[in-house]
Image (cartoon, rainbow, N blue to C red; front, top):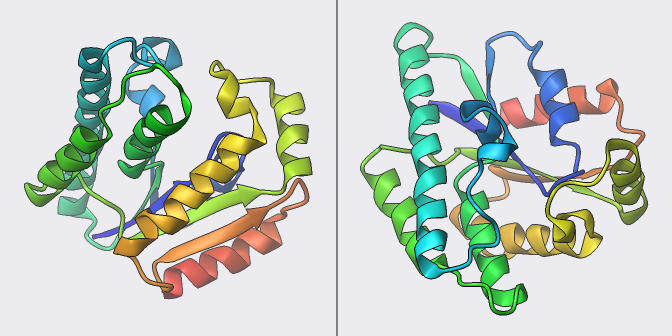
Length: 208
């Protein structure tokens, strides 16, 4: 199975890249979590108000990962050579729990529980971790131009560049330990990223 995850904080360019990739031959897009539950309005309370809510939130998103894994399994039976590209992956859950633990004073976190559940569910093949990760990271100017153009997201900390840099540091310092230079790829995005650049990126990803 070839599963590539497109990662990055809000306003990093994930949707733009995925819209480009969806027209590629033998590529199937695994959409982000909101698509499986009728929109972001149905996400759990965040930040959590209790440890119980934090655990419930992790379980909620893992249940969606199980649905995404079922989608992959069904397609693999008939198209074994297809390339799956997912918007985000389970590491996003641990990122948010880590951020709550370290940055949101007074908000309960279940970071250790999250990491262990991901490990357990991956070993049992109930969810999948990507073979490759493409991490998108915008420069600060492009980030705030996108915030202005697209409009702010619900959680204010995600509208700040500080979280974007925090997320990148988490992926490069923690997640990358499970990957090598041929399976973890950082792309610096700007407002001027064009299809020609995406073509070059895609050729590189397919080769690694």
